[in-house]
Length: 257
Ligand SMILES: [Zn+2]
Image (cartoon, helix red, strand yellow):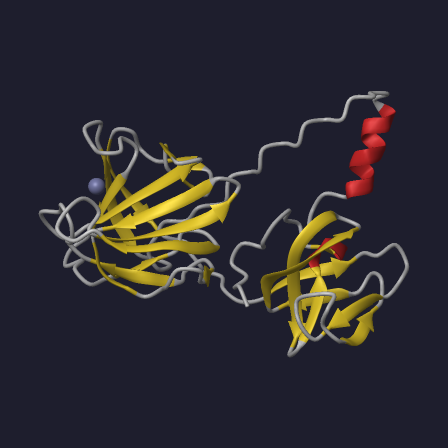
């Protein structure tokens, strides 16, 4: 987690406001190019596209190339529309109203309900549905409406064709954080929740290596309320609400458990 909850409360008091500030809109996920690290793909936008802000990706001999999740999330559609529209497509729900679509796939590598992280292969480039040649049709949506695509926060080219090079999951592996409980040792659990057995503690101020993150019991801690749990060893989980990681949500490039 990043923001200190109590600091925010104190700031509100200092301002002397009696109004409860509206919850800020959740920040957009950091979306990555939906292909493996290091690959370069030609992405085309055009005003006649449906929906308008979608990108069609190609590269030489791309039929069957892997397509990867552009941000962590939960797969909520794995659908085959047959010979029309998207054909075989996957939708990933990233939370906060954000979804991404991957269409005309040759095949699927995920199922509905599956948690995916950066770089997870979700399927392969194909030409299914209303497609006249192999390509990946990719969309980012907010609350169901297509939005202009951003990679690492940078707007894609509208309108035209540009080469996009993927840094998706280039630095995979562990993240790190610092336990902050304001004094008390933090309980380590055998799984991602307060209902799992206590298997030890870590002292306040301990630097921890985070192998992967997952969602579990919602906990309110130093950095606010979160259902994210950090795995710091085999069968050892701590609540992310007590860990300074530099990020409000999941840490980019740290895998889901
Ligand atoms: Zn398209």
